[in-house]
Image (tube, rainbow, N blue to C red):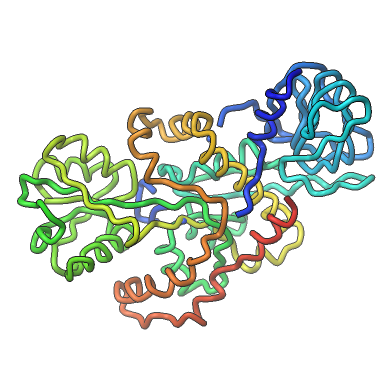
Length: 412
């Protein structure tokens, strides 16, 4: 088997070093064969890999084996062993991640492998994750769970509220606006990783008399109140010395916003994608778009609680899942041809529509370093919505926990 197939396989498994909708919103996976043991198997040519009796084997298909918990492995002719929690393997006559290996050539574990040792590593614990499963933003979680996590992980509908109300849930994702809302009553909430960053935009109608952002003064804009999108309206209006109080905020959903704009009920709309693009397509050349990426980006975060993170076995699984999420995000960045079909299937979304909005999403594989700064600034707006006093930086600091990310990266 040529090196190109091996490099393609290992590239898909590579890692990188380096926030979803509100609970009121109805809106807020590469291709490959999946396995229960190793979570994903991608075939090359040659015979199936064989793992030692010392550890728990990962799955192998067509000579490619990864995602298991074996202490060591042997690949047959043309085989590749990689990933999971395996420490290393030996190649017979096949290719290794280092190149063409002769007998006894070394293969480095790729997909999140912590050294297993002679006795192998215990299987990863099952994880239950909730998110807004109607949004593009949740899809990296789905791909991480189905293709890269070597344990069992389910991704269901919900988010932070479900995480906080259901003791069987380990992780939940939402945008930073909801992190701020929920953490007031639940100071044990922790943000541990960034799932997706989304750049918002306002789509307005020229027929409504809008040719510049300031023209929205006194007009109406539809969004979902008390969400990151509503916060974006305020942030954008402040760039022209106005606030959200200078226009009328009308409530809608991802599905109804385009119609509200098209029938003239409102002068503009804004939300996470793809609703703004659908609105723009509905009114065609009458549409005008306002976007400033320096003003705001929605940060969809992965959350847990202090109590869950204090459980050693669950923590081990969460660290491994974050590592898997890094791999999924890299696929979204570097192999969109693999990621897009998963998004299309998960959301029953039109492929051409996804192509139009893809550039407004980013997956950087990290916990964004300016998150606390953003929380401090945004809590002023969130506090005003509920009539409370904004929290100080010191009060908000415990909400961000980067220890899981550090542990995940250390094990790469």
